[in-house]
Image 1 (cartoon, rainbow, N blue to C red):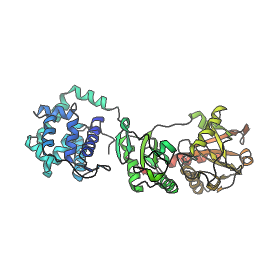
Image 2 (cartoon, rainbow, N blue to C red):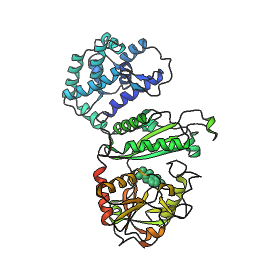
Image 3 (cartoon, helix red, strand yellow):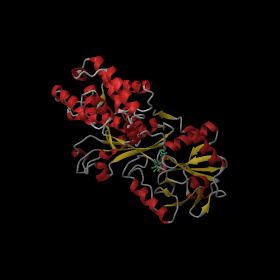
Image 4 (cartoon, rainbow, N blue to C red):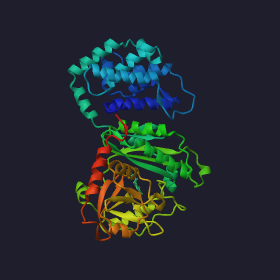
Length: 452
Ligand SMILES: Cc1ncc(COP(=O)(O)O)c(C=O)c1O
């Protein structure tokens, strides 16, 4: 819904949420939207109101004198009321009527006037007290759009998109997204996370990612206090708010805020942060030519320490140490062994080997993360009729594979052509690897949840 909003129009909605929070009201209604508009003094809507002889200041003071202070709980999950939602739908409609391919503050104003005047709520009283009607407002918008050069400049300025973070249940501008210095994630690595990719507006295997996040939290004994449906909707909302067509999403959760390590002393609910980024780990050339990897001396811990199946914040210390080993010798990745000396996975990816036309991958019980990309490759193999099994894997198997590749949300699928100084197969990405990569690229724009 937010994709076509100008930066200012988004800010109006954000301001409205802030107004609701200030008033300890856990909903955003048309009067909050009107106040949100009133905070944006220097916008197109303000100019239009100016021409009509009404200032936003005046609207604000009218509203404030009529608006009571909420006395409920502070707004956490600030939701738009049906009227506020209709107002935004009307804004879309007004933009369409005016053949504008963006939603600006002027359309929000029109949407508000249209909704408020038909419902008889507080916003409606204020607007009609000030003699603001729909036809008059529309005429002013059209006049301004026909004549105003400043408007074109403002639209150009607005095309720089404000980025949002979903923090503890609501969208906030990225620059204001802060977590406490006493957050258990920061103090102790006490939390879990997900990395997810968006391909052409499709959030790839979103349900599976959210399910894994909940599985990680459950294993750590962290209650997220939100349903999977809520987290999924929040992820979709963040992607849309940030206008992400293709990119990377990071969902990080921690047990909450509190200095002592004892979870009994926490003084907040779980921290939940959803942000979007651009992330590319390797160059096109590396995807074409394949990666050189080493085996790290740092091991994957056994399940009776930190279970590697849990995508926990804390476990990544080991993986970072292993990655540093790879960096020191100029390798693209490092394989990690478990305490029995079997291959578990790479620092941020799962491993697949191809031998005599069949695939194998280490089982999760050997220390591999239950990767979402790994799951997609297993499904692709089953669709293509290629055998793929989970098998305990040693370095002997790696060195003697015909082909090998790594899978992960961040790295996607990348051929691995050299390990510990030995060429794998003929040292080039193999035909089965390339087939799997093509099938994966076909799957990514459609298998998941759409965010537009
Ligand atoms: C240690 C580790 N193994 C494997 C993976 C691959 O998992 P996925 O395909 O779900 O990204 C990741 C990345 O998330 C990882 O961090």
